[in-house]
Image 1 (cartoon, one colour):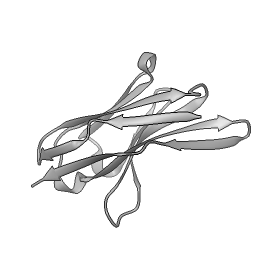
Image 2 (image 1 turned 90 degrees about the vertical axis):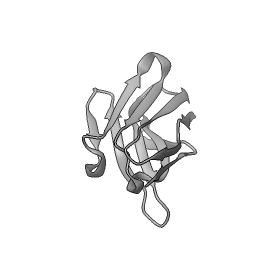
Image 3 (image 1 turned 120 degrees about the horizontal axis):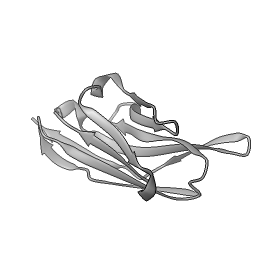
Image 4 (image 1 turned 60 degrees about the vertical axis):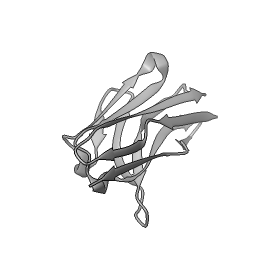
Length: 119
């Protein structure tokens, strides 16, 4: 099993910054992608940013240029630096990882951390 624990959420004013962390533990061998998704009330869960085992990254269109994903492999931790936050960034942010288990791709999710941006 794989466990993901997020931290760093909170309340911030528009224009401010937050840094989220996700610590990954358990059977981490073979995890090929890890990143962040978010879900606002009544909305679908959407991609924020992911990083792949080869170092490449993908960002959602709404956060490009404002958010940066990074990872510390030695600490099994992924970070999301969020700058220029806007009220529309308010959501629960989830850490997600994916790995091949035999012949099946398995997704793992954290419990989420709330980010609230006030105007």
